[in-house]
Image 1 (tube, helix red, strand yellow):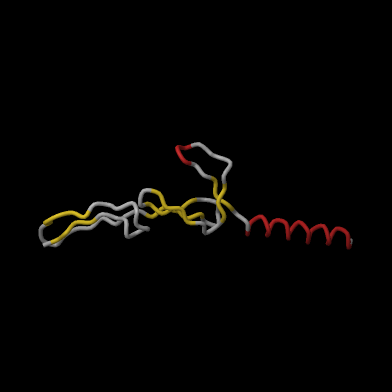
Image 2 (cartoon, rainbow, N blue to C red):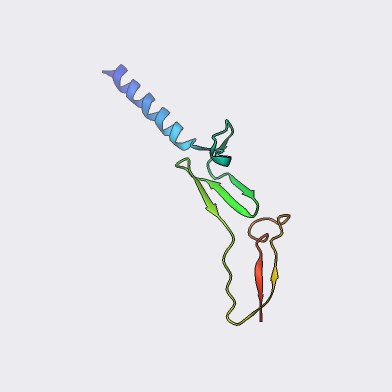
Length: 94
């Protein structure tokens, strides 16, 4: 009985370790590559921020849609050399 209980405890530890070490695959262009990213890893590409979640899926944040109350007098274009969200473009409002 002690051996069985020890076996169950070992399995539980292994499952918890696997769950806590969840990772996300790179799925660029719909193809899975061999590169994986750890939970909470953030990747920014073209002013979009991707975050690897604990369930092994990516969450995505993009730029906000800005609306002027009055009229638009210009537009600041996206600047990909800046970090997210400062790279986002936005309208210049009157």
